[in-house]
Image (cartoon, rainbow, N blue to C red):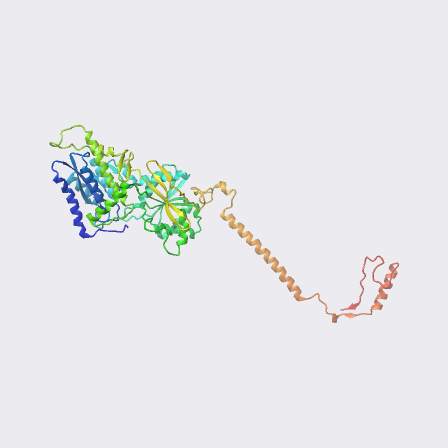
Length: 562
């Protein structure tokens, strides 16, 4: 569940006064026809990037600039009104938002709706505005499904564009077979399921490229199961979760003996919340015993985030936004990518005013509702003028596609210092050209020396038939090892047995004869007897020798008794 950061209750009257003041400002210009813009955004929960205290200063600034521009809507004046899309718990509500839309429609009959921002809140409002024929301009509502609503124009980042970037990444590195989406998903009623919708954008776009896309919902209590799932089904993995869960997952990979150089993890931190702060950018660092393992594992991680605009107009806009938010709501806005959402709403109001001005200038003269009154144009005509074109904007050139979505730029972060494990932007993706542009002096770091294959040569389970012919299976390997061990045991046993038997025989000493047990006979008598026997059978015998005359045989005779 998203943690709440609510404005103090004492500021609620101030918020209501801000809306009332804005509503009444047009009453001072009685000669001008009022064009009401109805904003539906969270009132107090500033954890949302599109919360009213974050976005209202940008909307008021845009309204003031349009009203002060003599070339824009010269006979009209913009008025901004606001209602909250929060429930009593302070979260975006898919029931409160459409109720507020109906109330605003009945009370003010607005020319356009601004917001909502949360996906579930925006969906019913998008259905209503499309039915009413009223333009809906937002910089939230990032889910891919909003392209089916003809009234919705999105001047902020969308997951549809995230999916397009995923396509370009896959093509750039030669991954044409398989991708995997791993994410956490909290289905609590108060959760907007950001990871689910981010994964959906990638799933829809990658699926169009004849890629096999597998998804897996990750649970912190079952990380080992997630590791097995990834090892069995993916090598190019897009991950959406918290930084702590990602770190635990990768450390578990190492503990389970996985070769991380065979994997690449594209982590979705779209607002770069884990890459901010002073000092080196080391998202793996926690100061615990797993730091070294995490540092090694994070070499396989590439981080995807929105690109921070660097043009002078945007930097000046952010400073103005900080000042106005402090004055209007006593709320402190920090430097973060959340500010591109406020800039998107600002650009949306300016773009709507431009499109409305162009539509009115080309509108055929018709009898108006009264003297000096402007005939309100059809909402779909104004909406179509905002699509498939380019506008100058505070964030740079605002390029809208044919579906009413903004072309979005992204940053790709990677390890830039292997020694310290520091991360930095190595590449940017330009949505208008759909190209990856490397940063000067930087390159991607691959633990294996090159991008890993998205499909292993022998399959994820080493069961490809062509590989089985030249490799042994696990069962075969086990049988070979068992046989080898058995042969070694038998051989060692035989040697040991023979050694023990020999030692036993030596110990018995059955072949040894004691000298005291031998009785010697008369040697001279023995020699004469032996010689007489030889002379009877052999010629030239010599009684002084026991050898034959040829000298080839030795004759033994009795010399003693045992």
